[in-house]
Amino acid sequence: MLFYAVSISLVVIWHQGMLLLHLLIALAITIITSLLLLPTCYSGMKYMAEDGIKYRSIISKNYFIGIRFYGRLFITIFVSLLIGIMLAMLLAAPLWVVTIASLQDSLGMYFGDLSGMPQTAPLLIFTGAFIAFAACSPVWLWQMFCIYYQYGSISASQTER
Image (cartoon, rainbow, N blue to C red; front, side):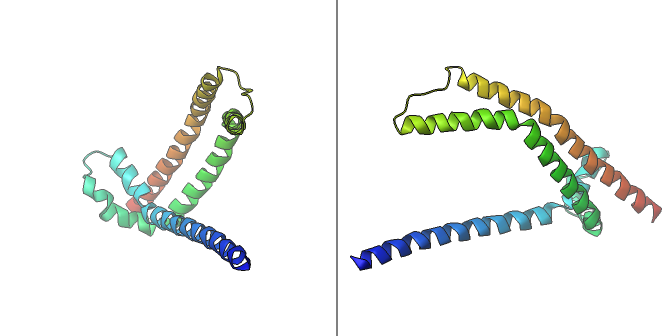
């Protein structure tokens, strides 16, 4: 009996440890990929803003210019994402409330309770999502303007050289 108590707890701990290890590996891959793709903000914006730029220039010459100004790009994107996430959390709060209420209602129905949500709950969630999307769109546009500003700043400093 003691063997089973110990072995079951070890298996549970091992599964939780493996889950944590997989989450850490996924987080590390995400961070490394984001850091490697950061210079493409400059080269991608140059490709979108100027005429006559070839597609392969995103990964060649302009990518290395983005690497040279890596600090500027990192700070700009980090700060704009931080502000954007705060604003998006605030603007999408009604959607979160309705969605969590619907999930809790579904969980209660799974355990045998009656549904307390109105029949129009999917419509309410859709309306909340639409309003949250419409409210967050200017935030995403502002983040794109921040990247465009850095592109112009880097291009101006490149012209001065």
